Amino acid sequence: MHRNGSTRLRHYDYGRNGFYFVTICTKPRSDDFGKIINGEMKYTDLGYAAIKCWQKITKHFPFVMLDEFVIMSDHVHGIIIINKINDVRVGAHNYARLRVREPSFSGNKFGPQSQNLGSIIRSYKIAVKQYANQHNVPFAWQPRYYDRIIRNERELNNVRRYIRNNPWMWHN
Image 1: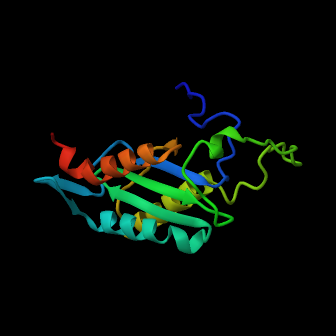
Image 2: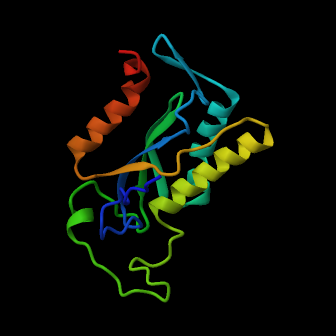
């Protein structure tokens, strides 16, 4: 098996304030979270657990705000807002003014990896997997996730609309 390169934006600090659209998929894209019937999601117990775990992200990461999200039958879409200094805005300023810090002992250019998008997603995936293990539900995530940095209000509104309409559009 070949491992593809990272899908993360090279030289971008994913711990910076900003709006991030994420998609996390189950492995092997099975209907672990429920089924869509007539454009409406009918959740399994694991699906309800995935919702609760998503809503608890802000308790574990107080610098995070959650925006639109949906749990689909085999994936999760959501907007995560990192707001460490209460001055987060949608826009290119989060992308354009990249400042690379000096490497730390570990060689990491961006400092601690406990307050970034990757750590938030990792924590969420662990929480859902723990629920599945505790309830003897066979379940696995795909090893990676997809993200997109939201750069302006128009893009934010388009992503919100996409997330809201995803269950209805699933079979259309």
